[in-house]
Length: 124
Image (cartoon, rainbow, N blue to C red):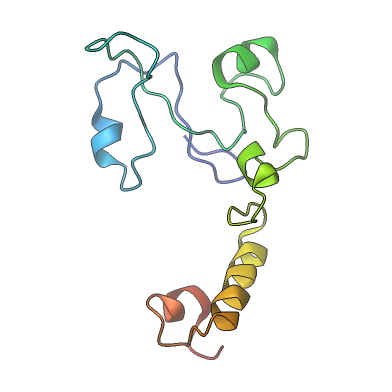
């Protein structure tokens, strides 16, 4: 399912560990837990962008299954907040895209850069 913020999540109570999401995801986001012994796969897990899960926001059940819901608290995902080089950005898609566009131009990127037209249009 998808949150209001556009984050794609999974419900750990419904997951059976079949692995279909692992093979279907082009980004490799779903992963089997690493805590168990070799060969014990269990249910899938993935980054939630610190947005919790299907339970009530900031409830104990949500925290125990998915960790802190930083987005509901008005905060950025912890990885983006702690990134010292600001290579990871989070927030409004248009703002983040503009920051990356400016970085590309500063580093000598041109409108011929792969994907430029799709991301920014041809009149940039």
